[in-house]
Length: 538
Image (cartoon, rainbow, N blue to C red; front, side):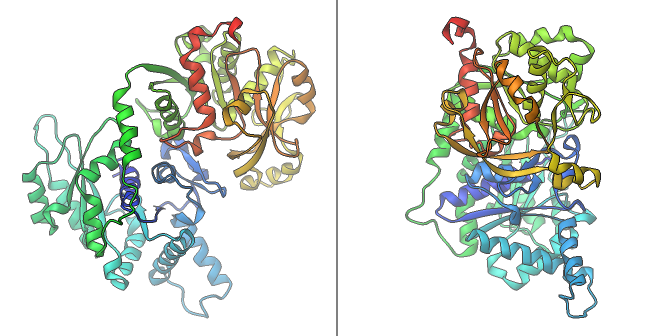
């Protein structure tokens, strides 16, 4: 089912097999008709993760990158819409030679072709393929059919892992295996017999229930893997390794761990840090994509959350993250005083006008009260507008996204993109993927990265309006990073502030658990020392 942990399970299996010395990559299959994740509401679907080559993908691609410590590209992501689109284009180009193009076998054939192409491009020895959704749903049947066909064509090269939830009803107090038994049978009805079952539950699986699932599911007992709830997802590979899942998978393939295998030493060291540190750093995130009914959906900002964690662990701190709703600052500005209690505050990305004024008010409070601030994408735009209004005196400064008729659009669409917007060709108005950025010496950003030119990932269509750059700069705003041709603003800073840095890109997408990301590392370092940073120490 959704949220049971298929993504981190896939990433963790990949990490374990990497540790055994094999070249591993991963593919995410989304059963949606959407061609990519870019048009999906983050409150419903979770974060849109952007790859270096500019693909808008599911958040699980982010998990793969973080766990495998490698970039994942567009070839490793597919949706139902993307597959159908390709088949229809091929049919229109007469690539089927006049055949009747049918759902079966041509759609599964295209799925298999994409998998093989990704394997070839990544030069992988093992490819983890995660099929999204729930067993028995109509949406993923064609992907399961493709998987069945691959097993038939390459029997010894394909194995199946089912991730299943074992509930413990509070009024019963006993772990129930029946839902998993039925999940296995439902998978059987698609022509697939799982080789392994990862049993997700609040508590570890006992031997009695392992045997019960094995007997009823026709699976070897030692292929029933316990996957209980844990404090950190980064402990999952270590748990899986204890259950010897790597050796068991390799045995099915007739392989063994390589003599020069790197092992999980760096991963174990990371987990020791996570468990050892107890001093906290308190970070507030001012967003708008986390409230869904009576529940908080952290998945909307998952890469930001993980980047904060990585940076905190680098500095031997435990992150304490709090969600702050920007709309509440619009309704009740007195609530802004709560920002004083945080060591640092982040304003992440987003789209649309909802909550915009609340974010601007938050930026003003953080600037005036010298609270460490990191702005990401929309965060830079809000910081620029706030500075224009309250420092430069352009009181009606705004963004084209909110009011495209306003006289002072400090944030706007680049002139060359206006035609695409008028024709509702929204995808072509986005800067997507990796772009170079040149850093200005003697800035906090330059100190964080330690080099003149960097590459970071983007996902936005609005930019700082160059017509206002001179006025902003004269008032004290520093353009710490720009495109190499100096045409696009990438990073802004305020020098006489402990840490007031905002970037047009999304550094969170490139953060890794072992080393963190330079900007997040620098932000957390200052946040830890916030109370010791008076104006005399700047």
